[in-house]
Structures are given as C-alpha cells and as structure tokens.
Image (tube, rainbow over all chains, first blue to last red; front, top):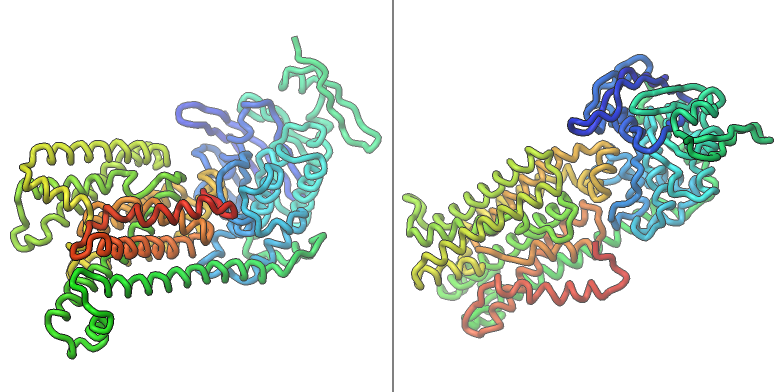
Length: 253
Length: 364
C-alpha cells in the first residue's frame, strides 16, 4: 500500500510553495519529512491531505485518490495545538469518526476512544475540557483523534513539537506501532533529526519546495547534505545503540 | 485498499496499558446529565409560559384563565377573546422568537468563532428595522395583505442584507473574518439608513417607527404566529444533520477540515439558515436585542458544546428569556405592556452575571 506522490505543486494564492515534488512512502513504518523552516513541509502534507488546491498525482496502491475523496483515506493532524474549545477530551477523540456520529453515538465508540486515550496514558483526562490541558496533552489528544479515524494514510505535522522527552517517545512509538500493526502509511514532519533518525524507516528531505533526497536515515542524513539544506556544519555519528546522532556545530559562513 | 470501516478497532483497545473507568458509562452519564439540565430548562419554560398567560393588564383570575384554556365553551366571550386572541398568541410568539434567536445566535457564534457574534452582528436586524421604518414613513401597503406590509418589508430587507454579506464573503472564500467585516459594514449601512428615515419622519410617524424598533409582542396574532412557527421549525431542523460538523468547527477551521468537514460549504448552509431564522424572528415583533447573544452563552455554560444538546438548550434559554421578559413587561407598569425589546436585557443580564461569577463554568 505504498503512497506515491508525483509532481506535486501547491501554494497559497499566487505563491507556489511546493514545486513539482515527487516521493513515495511505504506502509508499515514511519516516514519522516525533514527540511528547514519555511521549506513547505506543512504545505506538502496539506496538499497530500487534499486540504489546499494542488496539482500532481497522489496514488495509493497505484490507485489515484481524487482530492475530494482524500478525507476518507487520509488523516491529517495540524501543527497548531491552539484553538479555544470546552469540548471534553473524549468528545474531541470521538470527532475523529465524524462519519459514524449521528443524533446518537454508537455505544462502542466511546469505549474505543477511551482505550486509545489509555494507550497514551491520558485516559484519566477523558472528561476534562480541552482548554484545561497543557499543550503537550492537547497534542496527545489530537494524535489520538487522528489515529481514531483509522486512516490508510496518516499525516502528522510536527507531532512531538510540544512534548517532553518521555511523551516524544510515547507518541513516536505509538505512531510507528500503529503503522506496523495496521499496515498504513505514516508520514510525520519533524525538526529533531536525531529523533527522526531513530524512528524513521525512511526520510524525505524537502528543500526549496522540492524533494532533494529520500531513503534510509543513513543515506539522507549526511554532513554534506545538512550543510547544503540547513546551512550548518553538523556532526553525524552513530550511538552505542546504533542510532544516528546529529549534532549541529555552527552555521556555515 | 483497506478502508477504515473494514477494520475493527477493538483490537487496538487490547493494547491499552491501563484500564480507566467504565467508558460508555462515563460518557453516558455526561450525556444524561446534560439531558437532565435540558429537561429542567424545558420545565421552567412551561411554568413561565403558563405564568405569562395568567398575567396581563385585564387582571383575570387564575381559575378564569385556566378554565378558558381547558374549557373555552364555559368562558364568556370577553375572556375568551383576551386569552385566545391576545395572551396565547403573545406567549407563543415569545417562545418562537426566543427559540429562533437562540438557535440563530448559537450557529452564528459557531461559524464565526466569535463570542460576540449574534443575529445582529451581520446586519440582518438593522436591515429589517430599515425595511419596517421605510414602509411606515412612505405609508405604503401591500394591495391584498395590508397587515403584512411591515413584516414583509422587514423580511425582504433582512434577506437583502444577507445576500449582500453572502456575496462579499463568497468572493473571499467564506472565511469568518470576511463574514464579520462584511456583516458589520452592512449593519452600519442599514443603521445609517434607519437613522435617515427617522430624521425625515414627522413626530407621529417617528413614534410608530420607534415603537416597532423597540420590539413588541403586542403585534402577535395567530396568523403571524403560524408563519413564524414554520420558519423557526424549519431553521431548527435544517441543520440537525450538521450538528457534529458544527461541533467539530469549534476546534477551528484547520482541525475541522482535517477530519473531513467541508468548512466553506458548511458556513454557507448555516449562514442561509441563520439569515432566514433572524428575518423570521424579527419581522413580526421588531428588533429584539440581546437574546441571540446571551442565550447561546448561557446554554454553552450549562451543557457544553455538543451541538445536539447545545442547540435545543439555546432555543430553550432564548424562549425563557423572552417569556420571562414578557412577564416583567406586564408587571413593570400595571395596566400596560412595556415593549419587550426594552426588557430582554434586564432579564438576561443578571443570569449571565451569575454564570460569569460561577468559577466552575467556562465562558467561551
């Protein structure tokens, strides 16, 4: 169930942000999207999700997914954890199954939603208002909502941005496990390259609105590429655990 | 390709590391508690409605009024006329207008994401006022239906305001910001036109215009109660299929879009229904301020943001404020009825103050 992205072009109004980007993401693991600020990672994900006008082709299993039908197969979690709402945590997660909700809520849905919240260790917050949560807790709730949709393609925009170290691991483990168990495609935009290298089965590197590299972390995260894409001198080393560790040293002159 | 519906999600639940309280029980209790609050509100509305029918300048006895309602053939004609031709239509109109404004205000605050939004925000009410004032000034009337001239003019101008705001908003993608800006501009335009009409009117005509603008239930009769009932009932049920989408919109446009809500089309549908509800509510009774702003807030503080319960609750709160105001308007000056539009804020504000001071509740 590979996701193929061909010649994707998208932007806002007259401004083109993504210019003919092509990449593919395999199911069963986490694909991490990296790139400097303003390079179009969020736009890339939104375009795949069909949330903004775009040209190019998005195909799953070789079958093109029309833009209007993407919301049925693609689940997108925005970066922003703001928004004022006094909906309870359980209600927010239930909204992930919008199409199954009517005047009455099927009895099994709250049970399943709570099980998912328990998986992230926040089941005790089920009746808490969303506004009463910290940024990290909100992030976990929205991730639970995205997983609750049970999509074929899961797109996460900086899912660990507001999280502490422990919850970064909880979230990325949960996403990776979910992708493995369900055989879905999971793409997450991230800035922490060491964390990306630890969890990614593949990395897509975006720069200037196009894909400049993709593949296993060891192939993509090289000192030369970090210099070209991020404009920094960085050290890339392998830890005792066998993961790549990227340490930025100084901006390039 | 696998689909979401083909997969059972229960197996995911087996991965739970901890077991929480009975989930369906917890959610079920929350819904039951909210339904209980709604039932209490409807009970209060029923009691207030009965009180409203019992109270009036004619000083009829309680037994006399109840006897007239439940056994009209035994009542004298004057009492029958007072109860059936004056008091019952006024109470029914108060309930309908309050419910309509409560529903319209709730939807308006939801689609605009703004706690200050109300049916008045987008200028519909100001336009209705201008329409009424203009025909009163010009002294024109519909050939076959002269008694409907003012309501029809008010309705048509409110619809024109709605089309104007809709047109501007559609050009810019139906964003909440553009809708508010176009609406406020339209409101100021029609308020200026209304002031112009009042400036040009003679003292006698000005008195009629001001009386209409105050908002009064004395204009109620069974024919306009029927028309208002059809509009309010349509407005109440038209958006029922969108309740969960509207609930999702409270998370913001991006998040609602991300879970499959077509935000632009949802706003267009809601806008059309709100315009109809507002025009229908104010056309027969005049400008009734405050109800559409405060009823949704009171309802939200009491039952949360699940629109399946919030919308009926806002309708009930709007009706309670209107009927309560109707009672006060009759008590304030014995022997006369003070225009209800003057009283609505006096009734609603203390309740809102109380809820604001209650720290357990969230405002917005």
